[in-house]
View (cartoon, rainbow, N blue to C red):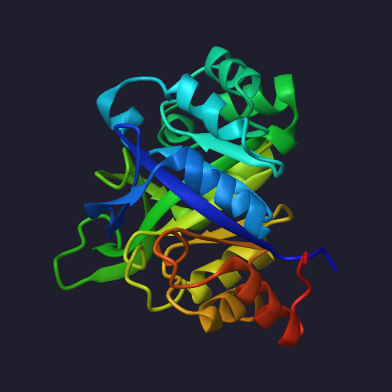
Length: 264
């Protein structure tokens, strides 16, 4: 069995690590270079860096910041935000990234997944999906009384709903060459009540590529649940690590004691 991965996430806005709740109400969480170095030293399996306003603001990810973070790491490093074309991927790989995460750009131009996988390999291409569980009319001519609930994908950091369903879009991304899916439940983000395990379980059994869970970590038990109930291959978290609520070495020791295959 492949070892499960623990992945801290640096959500970066204006050069500073921030953390919000349900994608809003951000607070300062520290310097991304220092945090990245800390997590690398503490035994994190990977690190994710997301420039969370790059797509919304129509600009590129800060290359210099990525280089500074990468210089202090000895673990795999994934970078996302404002990546729209192959030249962006090449620029960030040259800056020290090992993988590239695309989200809004992939929905707007699904062929970008094929292009990245074809030019750099599927292992480089992580497709991130921000989704929420919402009610929609259940067919043509449906009234407000005839609704169905489903997971809907969002663009631009959770600002714009799309007509894409989480599960069908994840499968399409896999078929186009994505190496991993990073699923963030918007309603679980920053709430600290646990991951969206039911949706994660459905994703995990329907895909042949790894699924990274994001949104909801608040206790060590939530990581155990996401691996056992959600069947996720990796668990991403931010605030519980940034603010010292959970220490990575202690989390890994706990998971190992609970019988989870973990890199220690």
